[in-house]
Image (cartoon, rainbow, N blue to C red; front, side, top):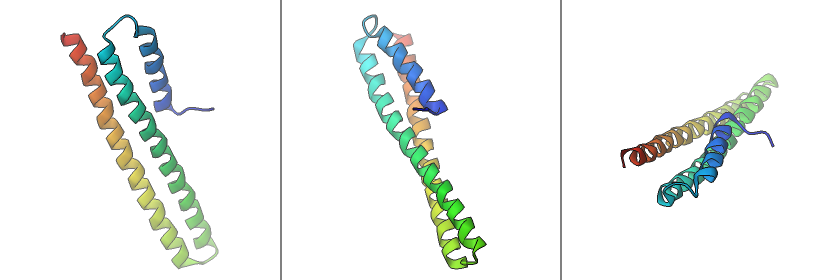
Length: 110
């Protein structure tokens, strides 16, 4: 299975946590694992929405090519809505990613 760049980064983090689990604070690692699980779900949804958006955009171009203007316009608007949803999920994942870094910083402060 091919993974995207964010998923590859998360895979490295998960492997690193697996190595550390017996060496460090288990509460900290549990918080990180919870965050990682949510981030993985968000990345999957972000990619699904993005692929659906691009697919609808291609369909819209086809409808416009065969001179079905109304169907092409409606399909294109739907593709824009899906792209905006994908971007919103991406922003939320970015916020969670920042929170995960704060968890790391908390551990450094202690």
